[in-house]
Length: 256
Image (cartoon, rainbow, N blue to C red; front, side, top):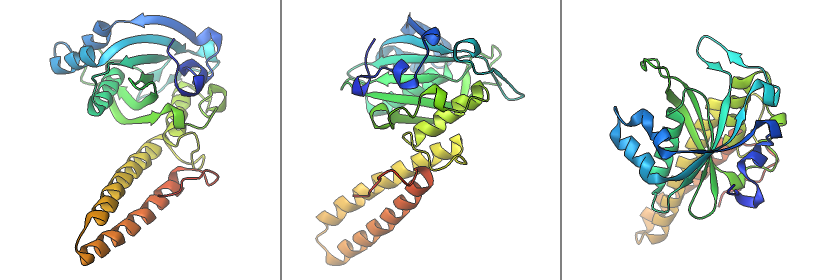
């Protein structure tokens, strides 16, 4: 099995009990099958971007001692854990797209570890519901999706015995919430969808700050440089507020 950073594989990051561990190859054709008729371009992307895939675990009530979830919106009786190795030629945009497609290809929540060509791993999680317009009810619609570098998640934070064990859906939502905050969510009141929204907002602000700081350094006009530096200070303050909402106070998230 391919290892994620720090010598841990996906099963170890989750603390999967032996009863929940699997090791079965998944063909690219199986992943692409749901899209071949209605979205052939998506099927081709999966075929091109995925080098290999395997099932490394299945979370079930009998394997992790967490009750199933049956509600009006969704039923969660098992959660597959997958590892997908992405091809060397895959672009950053395609990586995000192909992980979303894997989530969409199944009618249940999925824990997906995407192993990148540089040897690092990204954890992909999605809040989703079964596609209501799908007559087979075999695919999902994504409500919110998050990608988190596995190497920056707080050690031990994603262990299943640390998460909400009320039922399978509560466990998955807590996994999403915790991962979106790199293993250090600000409070127990922080919800999964809110954590994803905050993380996306933080990423956007940090990207904008990088651009503004770069432009300020290059600006030849002093007034323009002053304006950009003022904008950078405003962005840093916004970033700090979002970080306070997302992360716990005992983690160092200094702004550069």
